[in-house]
Length: 292
Ligand SMILES: Cc1cc2nc3c(=O)[nH]c(=O)nc-3n(C[C@H](O)[C@H](O)[C@H](O)COP(=O)(O)OP(=O)(O)OC[C@H]3O[C@@H](n4cnc5c(N)ncnc54)[C@H](O)[C@@H]3O)c2cc1C
Ligand code: FES
Image (cartoon, rainbow, N blue to C red; front, side, top):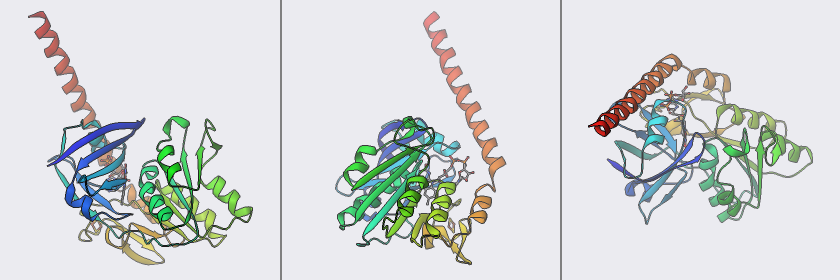
């Protein structure tokens, strides 16, 4: 069992969990992830390491609620427990002094790019962080990213804060204006990573993306996380999760990510019904006790 030390909502639908996991914290490297099983009936899901502290023996995860397991994780309170945590998994990001690097994050990727931007900055790179959200109430960690970036650009789809548009808009503008960017990293939803890769391709700017196919074991055994990169089959859990965005078969990735959509919807409906039943029973019991 792994104890939850901190559980807090960062913005609507996105949750931070700080977990006691000393062995993982000691070995963690930038770009790696863990596979989490919330309880005995939970599925195994991969989550990026958004931070860790080897001395304290803790890891930090940023969880976006999309289905049953992520909802269960977000519902955990401090002092709650996670049944199983495997990691750190995946190949670490290759980091060196590249020059000017753009770190782009959206959704849970805003958390996941944090250790990357910090390490790049530490090695003397000029770091431009670009984060995106639909609206300003969905942006988080601007202060943390500001500290490890030479420039922080935030974009909102509705224009409520920062640049009006999506992360690829200011990136494309910079490239069109002739700004020299040596490398781009993009972490977050598949569609955003695809758009970023398409935007940088014509400018010949190398782009690394952290792919997010469905994973089960996370150790190269089950084959579920199969992706195609440069015409070759790769397993994202052991050959990635980071790959060259210009070489990814994005159509295949998008299709494979929806393989279990019907089952996922049924699972979420069942979970919501159980939650409703649980809350209602509790409320009824409390009312009976009050009357007695
Ligand atoms: C290397 C990697 C790192 C990731 N890091 C983060 C992170 O830091 N924070 C975060 O919120 N999300 C992260 N994800 C995505 C996260 O794993 C999925 O959102 C999660 O598994 C959904 O589970 P669910 O039960 O809540 O939703 P479900 O209803 O089961 O699924 C919703 C959608 O999530 C995807 N998904 C479902 N099961 C899995 C699975 N076992 N593996 C991967 N994707 C799945 C599918 O596209 C599915 O349609 C990462 C994915 C990968 C591969
Ligand atoms: S998750 Fe099983 S091979 Fe990658």
